Image (cartoon, rainbow over all chains, first blue to last red; front, side, top):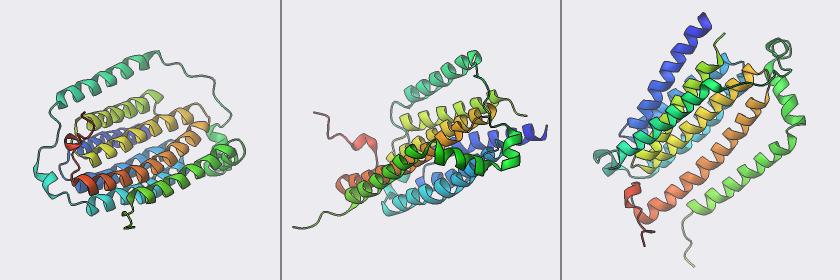
Length: 170
Length: 100
């Protein structure tokens, strides 16, 4: 019962915060609300026995990506953005599409059928600690994708530097 | 124990909010934030599927999704800076270079 109450609180907070993030006029405000949203999502991961992912959520999303967003918003001079209107002219069409997508997914959700359960039961995770079990799977079975992920990050670093640097006068 | 459907509903609603933000806002930075919102919604559903099926692959997949989101944020924000340097605006309505 307590876990359901915690879930309901987290769900209401997450939905309210994501609506707030989307509708704020000032991008700095929406980034600050996004920070709060990420902490609530980390809490949701904790209720799902995913403690490593909760830590990653706080460190990578709230610590790295959001600071990057904040730097860019503060770097750009967005004074005139704040006083103009927020939505494009066709925003009802966007709302219609989003609601249609939501309805489609929620109606097909009834016919969902989950497969057989795996070997990583909560008892195993509790005896071995979830992070250790996750690391064992990640560094044996998924070692090659892990290396590919590091290459992706390297390419992103190089690409960001090339795109954002000022043109050199030659 | 919270049923799996609740988590999937929550993830779907957050994804829908992200879709609306991406389609309807004029500010390109808010559109980027909406993409992050959608990726977070997918992560939530992946982790809940993984936990309810007693399998860790959901968590590993969402780990890779977070990696790609970080790379995408770096590249995308660099593109926004380059765009702002040339056009001095962050409104998608004003990006009409390809209008022919």
